[in-house]
Structure formats: structure tokens, C-alpha cells
Length: 101
Image (tube, rainbow, N blue to C red):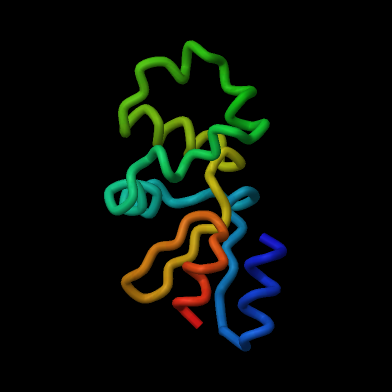
């Protein structure tokens, strides 16, 4: 998140920050992101929150079950997620961000 904030601030790009780790993500928003990019891209499967989810809950995941897990464990959602017009950026990739600014 620090890289994202620094990148946007340096380029004077206005943004609205929503702390979904603290405030959660509306289910319809999460579903819309998953429809566009796939739930697998939304889940931070390398992070400690995902690893703490019991394996039996992560077995045979489909989109519905995965989104429920992400809704219940918002810290397991990859950050940042940036909606920029019609673009959706998941995770910080400098080259993708440069295309926006």
C-alpha cells in the first residue's frame, strides 16, 4: 500500500482510499471484481491470513465459497485494488500503474 500511495501522491493523482481490511468489502463489489478478474487473483494465498484459514475450508473452492472466505477474512484480499475508470488493478505493478498516470 505504501508504494501505491507514494506513486499516486507523487503524480498528484486524486484517489479515495477504502480500508477493506478494517471496513470490509461489500459482497456485490467483491463479486464484481471476481467476475472481471477471477477470485483467484483477489485472494492473497501467500499471506498469513490465508494460511490461517483451516485447510478443510479451502478445499474444493469454487467462486461462491472463495468469496465467502474472503468476505469473512478481508485481510486475505490482495492489496491494493484500484478501480481506475474501466481498469481494475490488483496488486501493485509499477508498469501497470505507469499506464494510468
